Length: 200
Image (tube, rainbow, N blue to C red):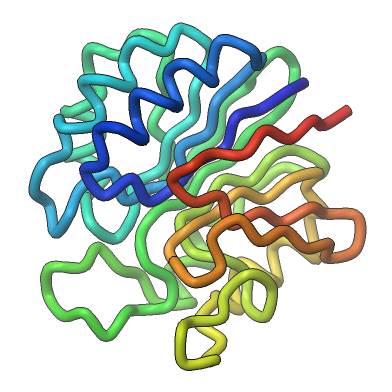
């Protein structure tokens, strides 16, 4: 399965148009959150992305809530919004958890969860599937511009326990495009340009 993975569009219409074109050559698409800026402008990119007809899995970032993303994606027939839930794409199990994890320093506007809440949201993650999260697992693709590790312990624990084939995340802009292995799991901080990965 070839998957187009992206995150953190932040209202970038040009990037959204390029992703629509790139989706023609893949089997599935993953959008790992932050389509909006502080809850503003979700439709800027979602209206463009809705032209993608391939099965698409989305999670909210910390810049939009689950409800806001579901409403904005309501007309996108091939898209499924996940948050503490799973779905199946061509026989491959997907699980999604959005939001900023752990709680960000950005204040009340940010759609955030603490590690205990994240553990609950991740509890149903199946083994050997694809995990879509906005925030990265701790100590993987999560170095901010100051060199601070900003990822989630709960997500890392889930990855080690469930060993998904692929984890797609975003959130930490300075590590966009970075890919690492954690045991058998490939972890990608996708970024807005999009990356195509293949899983067996």
